[in-house]
Length: 461
Ligand SMILES: Cc1cc2nc3c(=O)[nH]c(=O)nc-3n(C[C@H](O)[C@H](O)[C@H](O)COP(=O)(O)OP(=O)(O)OC[C@H]3O[C@@H](n4cnc5c(N)ncnc54)[C@H](O)[C@@H]3O)c2cc1C
Ligand SMILES: NC(=O)c1ccc[n+]([C@@H]2O[C@H](COP(=O)([O-])OP(=O)(O)OC[C@H]3O[C@@H](n4cnc5c(N)ncnc54)[C@H](O)[C@@H]3O)[C@@H](O)[C@H]2O)c1
Image 1 (tube, protein in one colour):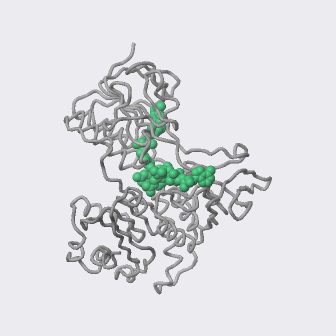
Image 2 (cartoon, protein in one colour; image 1 turned 90 degrees about the horizontal axis):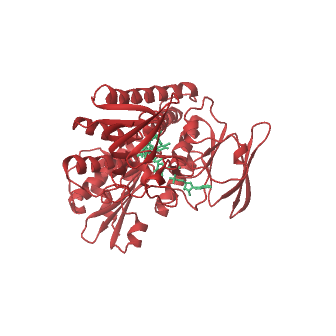
Image 3 (cartoon, protein in one colour; image 1 turned 60 degrees about the vertical axis):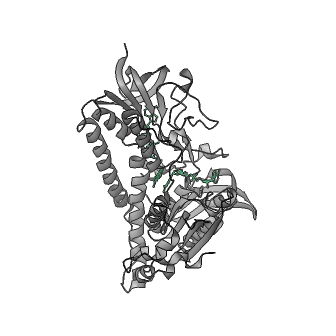
């Protein structure tokens, strides 16, 4: 006999956890099934651990460059296991926090550890960790199962002990030379991190520039900055073979426009995107549709083709960010619990690449504005013109802001110190539909990064 609940959540991701507590607070019986760690990828092997390690890498960089500020220092000694232990402690605390929130601070939530798969309409079989199974029925089912690293078809890869970010985050020895396949978010964040820990790093990317969705000038500036930090790039490269010799040296062979390249390293990180965890969910038994990559198809209320079944977060194809998954939770909570439906397709898309300096992005890029036929003007400003930048010695990068023919901001790419925070100011400007002359004349405390808002529009093309 299946056990019945009002709500079943599959996956303890960024939408599933708050959804469980919201339904429990509204008096519904909730069961949440997680096959791995509570908290999903962001907490356990995504955003938080990465940013904890990036902070350690930045500290090493600051020590290394302290003499530029008149502070004498020696080359920092990176105690890599200690760096990993600090990250682990943070992850443990966050995971524990999620567990307590679900199981102690909210009545009415049952947490099961196991793998869930559909066996019929609104019915799920859970294979529990102790090898027993449970059948569960629920009036509403929410799929929040996220993604895992995509592994490309590459001759020889099966015989090479490659890493994805999950394994790399638990490494105990610092790679001597890290080869990274893929120059996206993960490639750049991990690349700079390991370079600063002391590894040699080579990034191999198929595209002709990094960060495929950004404007050429932004990508070129990012590449220049990272090259100055000592990262090496092989762009426009088609990797076709990989092998490892008896000494543990990995050789990655790639066709490039300059001819064949054979790149040697001690470790290989695969960072070529993600694939959805939809393949072992039994979706065909209930008629949930997926696209050709396996992402679940949903409407703007996040409903799947099966009645009463919803999909939230990365599993419906992105954009794949924690804040988007969390907003999916808000869409469903408001719609189902408060009868206030809002479209999940109409929302701003802010994001930040956490390199140093960061790239904060909101709204249209210049290429997107052009493609969409939007009339726009561009303002750019080197970060070094901001007083705060010169005082703190953080002068790298530039701000790029687009305005429409009504003088309203329609997009920003902030490559510079605190790029994510400054981008969020532009997001507020866009929300408030402010016109750029209002920013030029706004009284801003001196000397802050925000003062750039006064000046960025002085060179509006
Ligand atoms: C290295 C890395 C760094 C990142 N950094 C950032 C960042 O800085 N900022 C940002 O916004 N985003 C970042 N992301 C992306 C972010 O982690 C995800 O977009 C976010 O976690 C949303 O995930 P989700 O809610 O869809 O599901 P997830 O958090 O992925 O959770 C899905 C859960 O479902 C479980 N599960 C899967 N199948 C089943 C099943 N059949 N039964 C039971 N349980 C199941 C999984 O074990 C997992 O715990 C990063 C990702 C990675 C990999
Ligand atoms: N700061 C953040 O918000 C953050 C950080 C990390 C990850 N994430 C999320 O995680 C997702 C996954 O990150 P990612 O970096 O793996 O994916 P990505 O899609 O950002 O980048 C993958 C890159 O790999 C390249 N590539 C694909 N196949 C290749 C091959 N065979 N050889 C060489 N290059 C190849 C692509 O051209 C692309 O540039 C991101 O899309 C993002 O949503 C976000």
